[in-house]
Image (cartoon, rainbow, N blue to C red; front, side, top):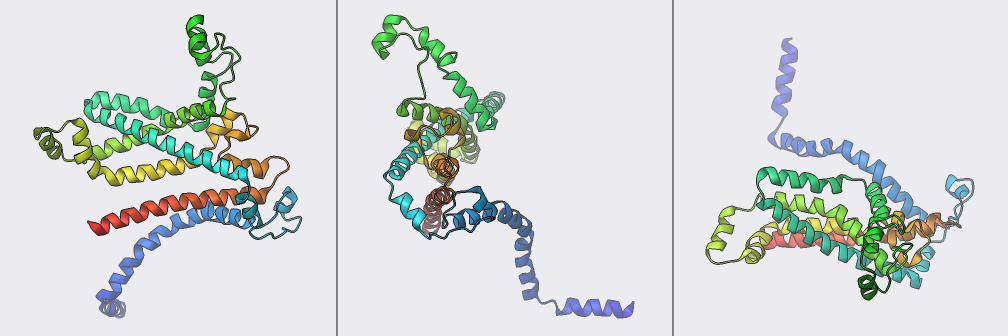
Length: 328
């Protein structure tokens, strides 16, 4: 017993402050290892597989299963995609759609967040709960409901337009009978409906996040601005927004990533991949990979390009945040 105690005491004596500090510094990384392992298995490994597939010509399931050799083509898939004029059309659709949705989502979410901040506790809780129902609804479920709303025979929108006086409907829209009207056939109208669906599903998260940020803004600063004669807009722009700029930056980046990757809503509203005029990068990648004849290599290269675009957007934001921290 005496020998064990003596050995323990000698070990503790040899434990220098620098060694204890190094061990404490390694502890966070050890605690993160399980999470990093899960991320590696669920995200990094599939992403690596997609990147690898983009350098091969894969046009059959037998090749994917390993029954046939994968023909190496290098950057040929990327050259074919980037040289295709249709890719530029798809990229334009994706960028314009993402910009419109990010702007509308941020504006609507911020306004709702400001409203919730002005309401009483009970009413704010009730309104926030109702708003969060839209965000909690699965994208597939919500999109099916919206597709029924715009159904060309029994949809709510078709029924409302049919209720308009014939003279007014003809004067405004050039038709009086809306039964059978294809709301999803016109590309511009399709993107308008898709924007409505995506913004409806996305703005609650922005609203609640803005509300949480508003709770951290000192009320004394806002009150001082009002005493100086500043109106609501000036108070928000000069006091609230500078304090919440990091929050808005994160929300813009997240919204951009989500809107660039919209797939479920578009696939359900369009009824598949038949209408190429409304393609965006995510559904374009899916169509190239799985529509007959399948081209898994081309689809993978489009997915990699989409990932690189999102990494660039995220990198630009991180650089802006680091620059702001250095300046402050």
